[in-house]
Image (cartoon, rainbow, N blue to C red; front, side, top):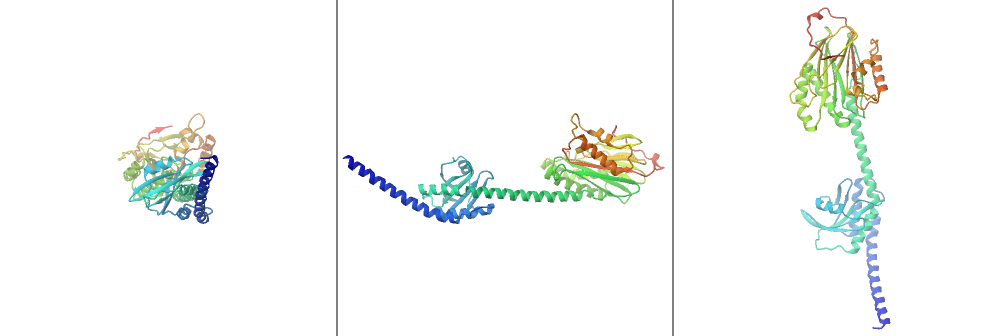
Length: 426
């Protein structure tokens, strides 16, 4: 064969290949045009992915289409009942940036798929696939190139949809958090009770938007002032929800006229299984003050010591039982103390006592030293304790403080009572 004949043959071969490529490109363009026309310019939400998939099926002339997103582990398909197997997910995650993959899936009905990576800013964020129920159909090189081009086209829209979905979820979570905050805020007493026999004030501040601290009070018909303080372990929404439930449970027990230790025992019995399943626990203290006699009863389940100032001396009423949710049966010992005129009771959460001052914890001594010498103004007393705690260090936990002053003169029958011995003296 002469050189001329050889080159003429090569030219004819190249012309033939060029003709085939022209036909293929023409077919690809015919298929891409409707895709480019139908794909939304911007996908604002996850729902906008559906039109993207519909456009893919038109452009690729396929029965099925799907998008799998790596970050959120979400799988969108047309039709929407098609499942993606665990094995398929592993293969798709292993797909490189510049290759396609074909696979068969059989969950109910068999289907044949081809996938291409969706790449945004050089990173694979998911895959785009076209599929058919015809297992004998082979995807051509042109069809594989088409889905590669489609994947490039929709990468920006998919990221926009993911961002919009993320923002939507954030907005929902923010609304849920606000609802929890409003509910938790609503159960904290707004107006403290007024009575000539006592003065009461409080301070409540969660470490975050919501928290695990709460307190409440009520008057019993027999003449007792009762109040309680609780602290669910943890912070944020889970602790807040648990605190709301515990606050309700204690309030209901006291409304049934249960004594402080009976109320805590009933609450523990009611909540133990739920707390065990969710790995929760909570400290709580209930105090009952007989306004006529001055008898103070205290039931303390794992909560920081109740501080009582009498005649210039300080007593600590320590916990006599573990926190709620630790044991199925709460064996709690009630402590009693007779109060006299101007005796002061301080209940607080560990958000105060566990403030880090740089060298040590603020502790009970920090609280005691913050109490002014003149305790007649209870509002000023409470404010000075809070200000002193803020000066001592940053609070990293929820804070609750309830201060009570018994203002009635010592009762003449006080000597007839035999109170139990408090657990500590400062």
